[in-house]
Image (tube, rainbow, N blue to C red; front, side, top):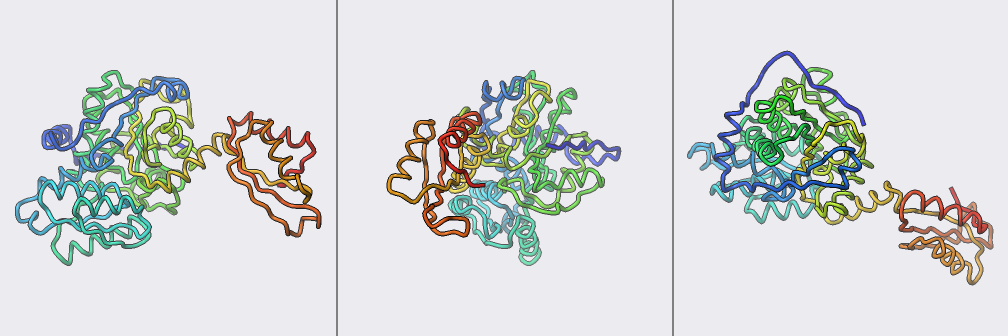
Length: 412
């Protein structure tokens, strides 16, 4: 994990504590006051008290309804009549669609062509028109800009607007009320609106509270932007955490995070998958990979952050197919899923003997496949691919040692 500090000297504060408090009044009865839940399992790993802020239980499945509703509720009557347009991989799309439904506004949402089908379906169910466009949020956003210019519809940016940032900042006010002794808040970062809103609200009330942002290392625009002193486009966007895979930071949140000196850390795909698995298994909460970024940072660097720490679970809108892949990846990263390739004699009973050996070692066989032809195989040999569920890294090593002791050849 790497860290970067966004301290700077030029002040361009576009959002104030009063703005966030006004947004909170506007959201009263609209956004859910999501619960907090202390995690003993994560506290033990992080070596400090950790409390989860469960924004995955928010309406529409993420924090996005906060900013979207505030922005749209403040439109004039004439602007509302023209309708709104937005771009999103899923969470902002659903937030805009729900806000439009509540406010009686027509909404068009551009989504990347590979957006998760459940997120697309949910956006449509809230009443918005969904238009697939481009391979990323940035490309979808370009289409949304063009639609706004062509039709006069109001663009509801996912993060780069003061009203949106103020709305997201209401989450910070809730944290201060629910965990009054908080010392550190860890927040997933995409475009930066959520972290900027939280930092603005929290540091205005409690300057001693540290706010730490987290990005996926393979889709991290903030570290380079902080170094350059301005928003810089990420060189790649290749992460399971599609909710924070944003190419370029927003001008408004970047300035706020820079002025607040907010640190931005990065986590690997393995960190994300392990975090998602832990939250599901130990906290009994379903989150998407981007929503688990805060937990991933705590697990990757135990003991580094002063507690009590509040880890924001920013969203829970995960495609079940992605969940299946991520859980499998998380099991492998945690040493609880072992994939083996062995060469055995092509004789009756050989496979049964192998499975018996694995059973004696305590491995739970999940999948077996045969390969009978190959340049590295003799005429009387067969290659077996086996996938096992294990009890952890030590058990994995025991299974391997037992196989070698029994005379099995494990292919590289």
